[in-house]
Length: 70
Image (tube, rainbow, N blue to C red; front, side, top):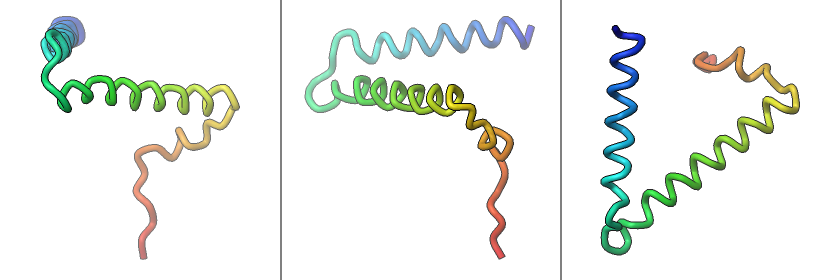
């Protein structure tokens, strides 16, 4: 149940909320927010793809570690 029902329900909720956020478009400047978020997401995916393609995966091993602060 928690591996099928909950992910499907949350994804459906996110799609509905996202759709209602942009249809109809809100007034200026709020209507820019979904597009700015989409550009930011796209840039992050491009950077991720670049790191994965170049074989630079050592950062993945360190992901989630806290820096050593003395």
